[in-house]
Every structure is written in C-alpha cells, then in structure tokens.
Image (tube, rainbow, N blue to C red; front, side, top):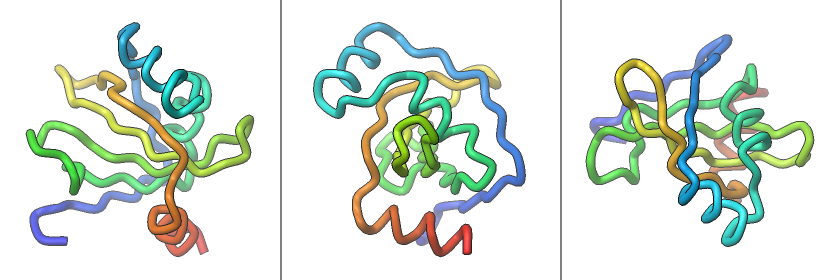
Length: 106
C-alpha cells in the first residue's frame, strides 16, 4: 500500500458530524444509520487507513470497524476537518475488508 499509513489505535474516539445528505445516502443506499457508523468508528479494534487508499483528495480516512447493534463490520469514510471529522459515507464491508479486519483483530 504505497503512500497509505495504516493506523490501528487501541482506542479511537472521534467527534464526527454528519450532514443530512450523507445521512440520507447511507440510509437509502446502504441501510446504515449514523449510530451504526459511529459504533464502527469507535470500535476498539477498528482498523484505520489514513489517508483512505481509495480516496482521491488525500483528505479522507477509511475506518473498518464492527457495529455491535448491526452485528456487522462496516467501512466508514471520514473527511478530516479542523481536528474533527465529517462523516462522508458508510456501508457493510466486503469480503476483502472483512478479512483485513479479522486479520488485524486475531
């Protein structure tokens, strides 16, 4: 992963704000709620990619974490903004990110 810093924090508590458009997109397209995405971001075992390897701007981070209420691993995209984060999107992890999460937590 050239140019991507993989960070695995023991505890990552982030202040994430979500705008209405992002929330509606997550619900309508991915059926993921803000509460579920927040659980994944704050998962003790979440895997953090900074910057997001698929991001084009270099300003987003990718978090792969477990949502307890959903009982599923999620991918959450966060935009770094003035020391906090803006939520961009979240969706259920595919097999690749599910594997990466499980490898990191085993």
